[in-house]
Length: 386
Image (cartoon, rainbow, N blue to C red; front, top):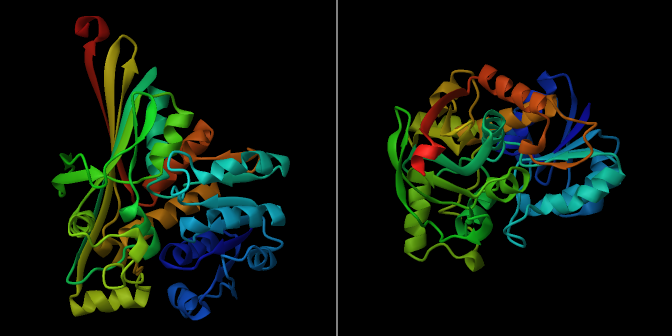
């Protein structure tokens, strides 16, 4: 396919290189050409075009002739890029939603009718979280007779002397200042920012970690596709604890915007190497756990999935200088492209893809080195509980 990757930052640049390895003809677009080339690397032959992603016709002109537009920009630009894909008559893929205007519905779903009319497909939230987490919930639903509750727990940790952005600082700030959505008793609600703290036990070497409510995209799509009664997402780790501390100190205000000293620009691969060499950045880790409670025959059951992504040092061994979150998002997005359902017209979150496609992406994630474990616990029969 001819693929246009809009946004050649930490995730988009790595994704572009992975798509070239798959045999696609890839072009990148970015507002800052010099910075995009620094992310892609001196030896990269991927062409880069200067594009203002806030300008619809800028995107249309740069992406004309593409079969697929991959939106690796901040989610606030989703609607502009979706309209550009329709103008170009291209398929579309992104990695996150922007829930400020409609906190309980992914804005991309509004384009369902238009993509069907153009006979084109849009796959949304196709990254690590959301993305892989959605696939694990859908796989659990395949194994159960009914789903009652879904709980997703994430761990994000960066060991450094100074704040280092693991991914887009705009996206991190947007998540930090947004109220988290939760789904309780069959209805959507807004939870308290950094609220409902609990201690969750991740697999070794992480162990028990305090987690709090977070504004994550899984909550707004999974309950609309899968019948359930309850769902929430919580995040822990020193990255999120730092945000929680700033919030309690009154330093996180949407009106003030992301302060450069708290939300620095994402370092390029060369800058990451320098931070490691100078001892400013020590380590980084990302992990996800998914718990799905439901019915299996006459018994209640809990299915737990644990996904451990390669750490910063494990990624370095492959001569790649990327954070675990950017690495995981890029590799999962590449798998969604590899198994892209071109004939399934409309707008589809990961859980709405065919079962065969979902299983192929999960198999590909394991092949990339993402360790995914599953544990099924059968509880008492329903009659005994009553």
